[in-house]
Image (tube, rainbow, N blue to C red):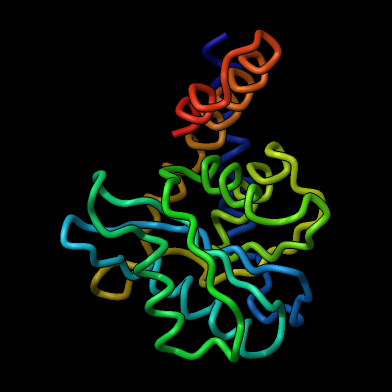
Length: 209
C-alpha cells in the first residue's frame, strides 16, 4: 500500500515537473467572456506577493489585447477584516491598464477550489473562461474549476514557476503542488458526498478552504 502510494505520488510529481518545464509560454491570444485572475499570497499589511503581481499584470495584458470584457480577481484576505488578494491584484491591473475591461472582485476565497466555487457564481454557467496562474498551477486550477461546474476553460500562464526575491525559481512549489493535487481530490470527494447527504452549501464551501 505504501509503495503504491509512493509510486502514484512520484508519477504525479514527474507529470507536474514536465508540464511546468514544457508548457508553451507564447500561446495564441485566447478569447472568452471573462478572465479569472487566481489569487496567490498577501501579507497582513495588504501587500500582494510577486506571484499575484505577475498574475495581475498578465490579466491586464490579456484584457488590453481584447481577450475578454471582464476580469474577475479572486482571493480573500490573510485574515478577516484585512485587504484582500483580489483587491490588491485589481489595483495592480488597473494601474497597468485594462483597456476598458470591467474588474470584478471575489473577496471570500482562500483556496483554488474556493476560487473556482465563488468565481463561478459571478458568471453564467455557459461562460467561456480564461484561467491565469503559473504554469505549474494551471492543471490543478483547470481540475478545480471543472469540478465546480465550469464548462469552457482556456489556460494562460502568468509565468512558468514562482520565483524568490533573488529571481530564482522556487522549485519547492512543485513538491507542494504534488501533494495539493491529492488533497484537493479528497476535498472534492467530501464536498460531493456532503451535497448528496444534504449538508448546507455554506458548510460544504468551508470544507474547500
